[in-house]
Image (cartoon, rainbow, N blue to C red; front, side):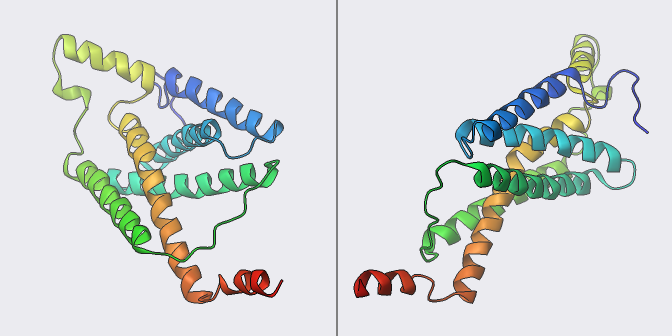
Length: 200
């Protein structure tokens, strides 16, 4: 059961941002703009809220680092579903690119994996960073204000940052793996279009 006493589990600033993100997503669906920069930002805002809420539910049960990783995976799954929804309602869909994976795909996957390891590793190595119990005087009051505005300071604000930075990296890694799997399963994916263009 959620505790509604102060500081809130999810503060008013994240709630306001989530309302804004929900409206941006709704507008992209209704106007059939589909996948745009604004709608992708809205998806990330909505995913961050869902991830923070998920982390609050599982926090008493599992380790904080596992909470972050679970939130990243759930956030990435939700991100893919929401982008699929936006893609399905888009008025004009560009042709999907079926080019073969090259060195850039491997480099991008390496960057995404390294970024995830750094983000989750820092969270694992420094789990107490940002907790208000370490501060005294003015800094303790400032930290309490952040708790009121954002939520309980020791977990949600870090979960927000970890998810907002981790979900795009995890999504990029999954897309890279998908490109490699597609290449392995469909090795001649580019040939039919080449034959059609050559044969008229």
